[in-house]
Image (cartoon, rainbow, N blue to C red; front, side, top):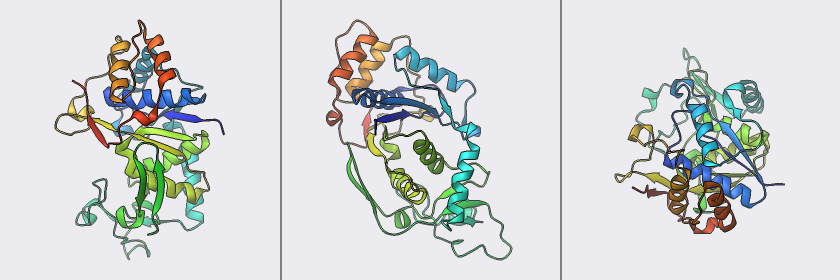
Length: 294
């Protein structure tokens, strides 16, 4: 299959340095392979969306020279596709309704991503008098293994380390894990390049791929840019937006962060051309996080 990559930002604010690193790496990896680079706007979580942020992100990418193929896919338009996938899982008995509130599982052990491991309270059925709040998928103890192109071999027992995770939230929204699996499959994505903050979610997504009969993608998880205190760059940490008006500076900083040679080029277009010729994913440090440049 032809390499098909994608960049899938959430419109919770403009692109900052950390999101630029993910966009640039995924663009370079796709273009170096002679492949397609798609753009998907992960705008399912409307309460977190910042008005105008999606258009700002598109403008920033254009100014940086990171052109995408085809039309932008908006998750908010795909409710029917997610419902169909959830229905398929329900019909094969792979899901169950859950009536637990967050406060009722607050004493459960911590999962690897900081959430609570679901103890399986509703796995055998809802208790009398309880109503369904969310839908969870049944997991198994057998470990899921995959080899990440940067981070190496990853092994995780989803049942023990995460628990039966939510596919439809209590507010009715489809959870990220299911939406991203459906979108990647239907867009024909072959390779996923993204931040290592999502590395621990990958076994969950592989489990859903198996249940739905989808092929497993290739994965490359990049070090996440963090503050001097170790916090991920983002709106909460006051990360400034990418200066799209100065693309050479921003692209150069992102290339250096990725361990790539920074071409001495007079324009952003020529810098990208030089970076593409020299792209080497093996130069990326196999770390979960790296401090962002000052």
